[in-house]
Length: 115
Image (cartoon, rainbow, N blue to C red; front, side):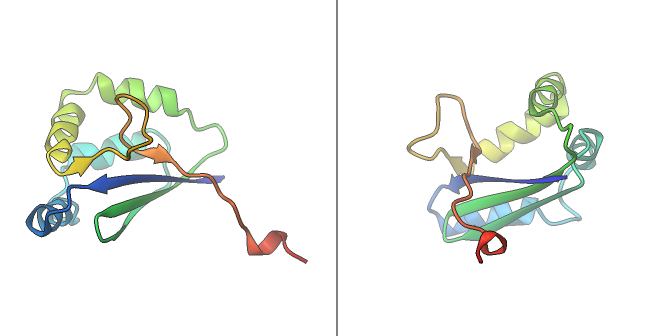
């Protein structure tokens, strides 16, 4: 199993940030979104926030296919509606590629690798 990390910013507006968090409460997130995550084989997905910066941590099986997940999401109207809604709160990182929302993070330190 692998743990993947991604970063994204929210628009720096306290009201929008609060609304974004509200949409991610267990009783608010659309069931189709949870199903699409689980159906892709993602075992755990967490989003953390500090200020307007988000970090997403995802536990995936070794054979996880991100491209297949992206293709399935692109073909799912409900996921596309969710993404459009979330886009009203999000802003791209300055170094994100065109069209890229969540930017993969590179691990630069692991205590377990130290003597």
